Image (cartoon, rainbow, N blue to C red; front, top):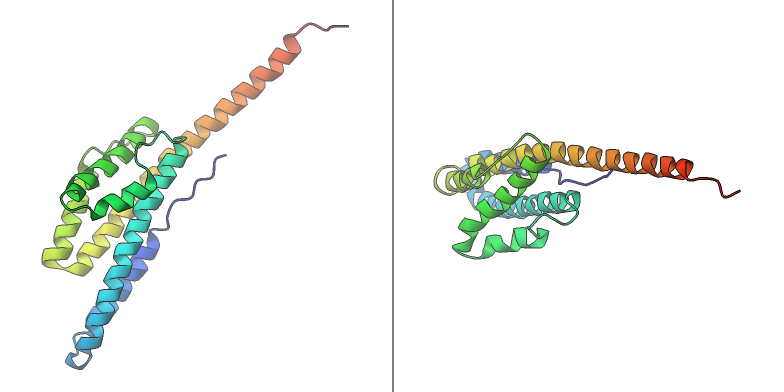
Length: 180
């Protein structure tokens, strides 16, 4: 059985909870300055952890596909920092994972992943940072589960392929005539 490690997206919810707690504490005017600093650093840690999850999901898919996944894990993160291109990029890497899911499970995501990430960004920027932040990690959890199911299918195919090759090799050895 192939063991491929996916990122632990649930930790993002811990970051979101910390952000919410600091936000509630910020309601007290005396702690606003310190709360703002804490909110800023928690937001930065959420962004960094989200990008780690993006890296981890792409690494897992690349490992499961024996390097056939077109997105290099480090590119999946660094291309988010290129202005204007990043709008294309969120659709590109989610569609590449969607194609992997289509090929290895009954799920196919074409464009929905990029749209959801764009909506999460707009929510966090224009409406409520906490809701946007938690939406990112909800999407990540959903994507992670779909990838995990597809990886199980891939590893079972690999395992069945090895079993059939092993059994074919055993029959080939048995079918060869004795040289005695």
